[in-house]
Image (cartoon, rainbow, N blue to C red; front, side, top):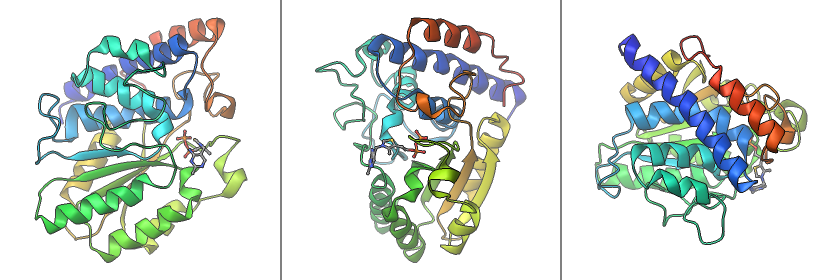
Length: 280
Ligand SMILES: Cc1ncc(C[n+]2csc(CCOP(=O)(O)OP(=O)(O)O)c2C)c(N)n1
């Protein structure tokens, strides 16, 4: 991919970091940490890799993205609005009564493929989607993002085993390994490492990257798309919870807390100061 296009993706991720913080500040609720960690990957998926069309969201040939860590919906909503699935002004209604943009994604929202919320379930649902796609001889991919805290759910490993047993080469999972869950560091709550060895042992291709380095993100997606060995592929995306806002980084207090006025001003100043060229 040309350097100019990579830079455009980096600038888009910077722009959407601001959109995420704006949404949370306006609603005074929501999950900043996991939204800021996933946004570089979501930008690369929606602005580069996924075959999707905002004007035809139900196209039978589309790729499908499942946000299993549904609480990180602000990241998804920011990119869906940017792609034109719904007007950007809807973002102001995030988490308000009657809004199409609830705390956890709902199927009524254009572009949303999965009503997430209960952790551990999205990857099970994605195995079903991929199995159906395989039976239909579809060329589309199913891509699912899970969290590292979420990986402590037993259902994740049952889904993992089923995906390799059924040779779901059309399934790509992304582990947003942002190191922190709701109550602290994942390695202290219940360590999931060595995560790569576990997924390999379950029969998956494993690619490991820095999930804030856009070059690496793009090349991992290219590799995952090109894998042709009937195995599902896991991209372990090493990220930082709250990335881009110093006082939110690796701070579990900002797992599910909106910024107050002072925090909001500081967060916006820091995001505006990001140099997209060197960000990683
Ligand atoms: C089954 C289930 N148990 C508990 C919760 C409450 N909960 C929401 S987010 C979260 C922490 C998730 O951590 P992680 O997967 O690391 O997410 P991220 O850091 O990416 O936000 C928990 C326990 C839930 N949504 N579903």
